[in-house]
Length: 266
Image (cartoon, rainbow, N blue to C red; front, side, top):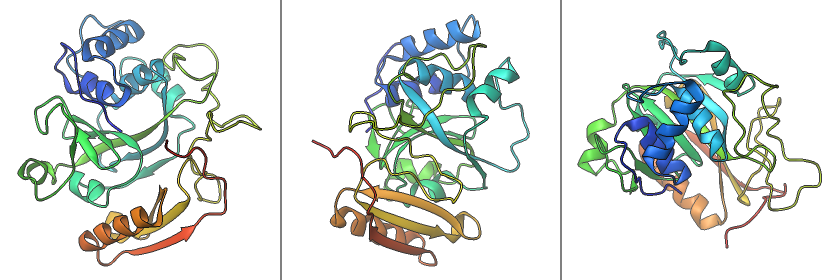
């Protein structure tokens, strides 16, 4: 769930970090300045945002990138970008903000659309205030503010998960060592869930949620697949009902997953 954005800094990058990690924007900007030796933060690249979130215990586990995104997508050091995203599964797909958010994808995302960062978490959005406001609000196309930005082209969207013990506050922008192993250690209990990264057979490692909804969203590209998990059948049914209204040509399958669903909400 997103947090209300707080702090003195007003730029969209630190605001997205604040919404996801729950820290003030000026603290997020200070981390970026320290990690990347920047005198000020007026614009943020995705690797800077990911490195700062890693300092607060969040790591990327999946990314989407626009096929026509040709501009420089990393900050000053390309090796830092490669160290962060080298082992992150990435899909290349052209879509708009509305196309992506209307089906209510699960997880916590930082989305770069039209040179502006938006934070999204399980149906709620927030930004620096330029588009949607600092207080998380439901993404709902009947909302004029949401509808106004729904056709903005997504350049990059990165899903973040809480780091497993041992990964938290690790500096992904530093030059030492390899990228951290984000898989949960063998025998880990409920306090250290496995990361929901796709495995070679293209299934998703369970994190939380007993009911799996497997979507084939043809509007995201031919046969583009998306998995979402829910703690109850009612939540899964509501998700499918909402998604069918927006994407009637897509297919949805709900099943009770036999795999360990991980920790349940209190």
